[in-house]
Image 1 (cartoon, helix red, strand yellow):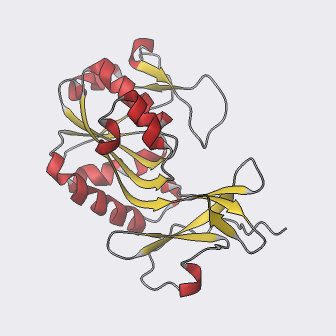
Image 2 (image 1 turned 180 degrees about the vertical axis):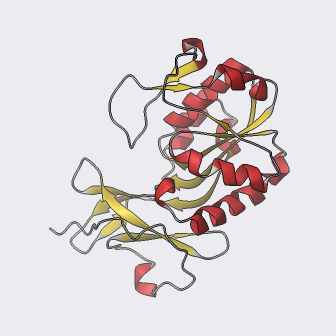
Length: 232
């Protein structure tokens, strides 16, 4: 059975206003058309998961063109404006491609990045263990630089990343923000990859799913003879 995937070299470089009708409905072959709030589409490459008959539509923010990133940041800024955040917090690695543009659009002079690299002046008490759907291996931790804690403590913070899927990375960031005394008022993403994150965030706190916003959504997929179709 053909797997209907291809290299991602040309993906995430432009938004499309007109997509052939045959590409808008399943079964999908090679790409999934993600619809943005303004009616434009960002074609996402389909990537197989560990199981050969399962896949996701992928968005890799630091592979995207500046034009695409700017458009996504503008949509995010419009959604987040009513929250009036003090701080835009970027999650590594791919949230760091969006957070600077978003912060500038929202009138901020800087943003706060988190990181996975343990600098020698970092403190283990200002870190949390992290896993995600797209990474493997154990032992990684999410760190906040101690020098940036004063920018976060007592401030209204929006957490920014490229994708929310299982919700585990978002919860890790929330735990870390609790450690530093930040008030997280929003969780902002370019893409929601399915809705599995809803149950995980609700288990962490009933109000958290309602604080999530995203620009576009993509389903989990399974393989048929004709192509990829959304998992029910």
